[in-house]
Length: 232
Image (cartoon, rainbow, N blue to C red; front, side, top):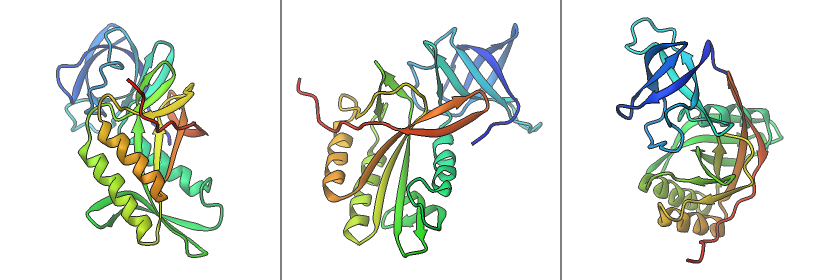
């Protein structure tokens, strides 16, 4: 996926979940933050960020904050980007090489999954996408905060498999240079346990890193996954 009209700035502070103050060539600007998560390790005063100009004159904020440079590594933190990037990636065919159609936001049971795929040969698959921005020592982890909604989605994917569908949980790691993906056991052990149950039930769990450009985000390489809970 691509962004339009981007500009670099310096992060100053974040008064609330929705806005931040940045410095653009000596001018302080209030911008919209496209991620309501905590992002405490990303939004650090002095870090370089990338903004996208909205192009909507009616908006209160002229720019959206989409990426940040954390210790030399660019990380996309746009919470809408993983779904858009995954949709583009699926349409190109890495998972489904035969002719197929990708649909957005398909409801099944008590959940609405991000993507649904039907192939010419009759394969039917639900794909739930999770964006990952939390990194420590080149290990990516999810979630960065407890997510009962995420656990619910994993359980519903298990039900999809039981009902004869294919089911995928795709972690889109919004950065490069990652050597491993793990559940964030310390933050939400129930999510990690749900992932292990899902894998045993036949849900395909995948993690891919991304190339983060100043005006783009592209899914690239498969990242190894470790679902084992660490021994304290």
